[in-house]
Length: 438
Image 1 (cartoon, rainbow, N blue to C red):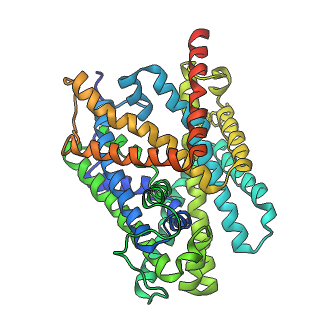
Image 2 (cartoon, rainbow, N blue to C red):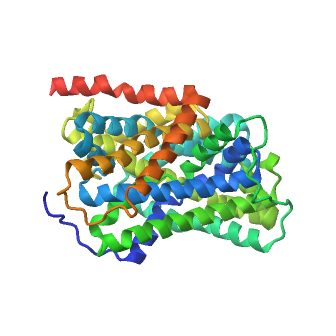
Image 3 (tube, rainbow, N blue to C red):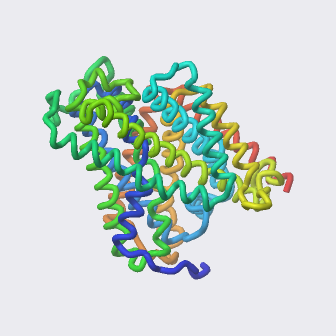
């Protein structure tokens, strides 16, 4: 294997901040509505957030071994290619292009429009047009050049932490309006415990989205074998604690029935904590956080079909690899992604889109967890600067947790699961057509 040309400059503190910055996103402000509606219980809601954090720690520790053993551009797509071959890796690239990134952009545009309408008391009939305008504006920023998009991302990265910080601090200091039974893990409503809890887990995992990429920095770390597991455990563990606290604040400020299904719950909690004007300022901070997340997914997403098209591995590669003369941005890939996202906005809600993308990506995550076992046996001589701690326990926990979520999603919401599987499966004939035509 070729020597890694990247400079090893990232220390433990740099790795820790990168892990937390990669994972903390806009999902924590809006997924409480779905989690509470599935559990109808404060205790089980809070447990779901912690358990999802535990699963992502196990997942991050596992996939990080692949990142150090296969330090190739493309991350998970290349890990799957090395382990399973070209066709499965193409399917991941296909799923990211057709489902994952467009669904993220569609969902975040919808939530941005929802919050904007709530903040300025506008007519809800403009939700979809406003969501589309939001997505168009972010794509426009990216078409102006990577440097401008990166500057937007840097500003949003700092600002997105402020609403979390002020809600957490104020929520802890101020007395609660509602008694929260933290130890009561029973489920409310008519759902079985397993189906309600699995649906809640699926919802929480959107807020942890980004964990799959935490191992990508391994090739630039000074001591990956020592510092990477600590950065993943402390980083993702800290995120889980922050998520637990902010949801505890939600639950002690508003009754559960006012949070369930209410995508404006975070704004209403802010109004309760800071008054009308303070609540509006916090909501503006949340909007900036969502816009930053939207920019991040747009910037990353347009480069997946572009990278695959460079080797003529994707349909219409001739067009998708075109870049603008001045800014060198893959403008065709950006416009295709935008069109798919706008179509999705008309077909699905925020929760439907995010649940589908998480289901699809965790299906591929299961292949990545299994890849650690396969490569340990098939390629024991492969250089591994970092190995999963407590092997095989940690990868098995990740697989069992992921398998439980996927199985219960298939049972409880087969339409959502089969749609994700079906759209991904369309990539199989596309792959063979592309292979034949090359």
